[in-house]
Image (cartoon, rainbow, N blue to C red; front, side, top):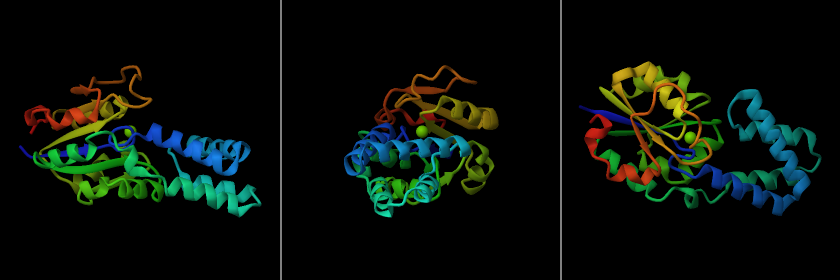
Length: 216
Ligand SMILES: [Mg+2]
């Protein structure tokens, strides 16, 4: 049976908690605590308003209220030019290569249309996924689009958010195998909906998991 792997990025392939902590330290060092605090306030306000992390919108709001454009540009540069490959989880790219030996790999990520694709590109994930990268504002509402673009008999959805896996299961039922990677700050979320088919503590474990387990 052919299978398409739908791979999440943040806290699944890449340590996004670590990346955000790195960004916070770098921004504080560069522009000071007051400016950094205000930046993160706007980041959270934007996230609450749209339900998704949106750096371009955050910078637009910061630019509106700050007279010093140099400070904004400095902050922007730190966010967009972060050392993304350093934050890949161990064996993340090797796992992608291994999954290609079983089926098709598709990166399925949530985020804004500027920063998120840039992060996926600069981390090396886009190349490993051979350009199969889909970024949505709320990916769980675009599953029909995903399955239309990559029509396969079976899917394996790999994610750090159990609630998203349950949503995919509710839509695709027996056509999907769900894989919960318990990394990052969602790792210990209380169970939500249908339990995942497979639970691992590290993405590296997918390098050796038997292909049949994914429904292949
Ligand atoms: Mg994630």
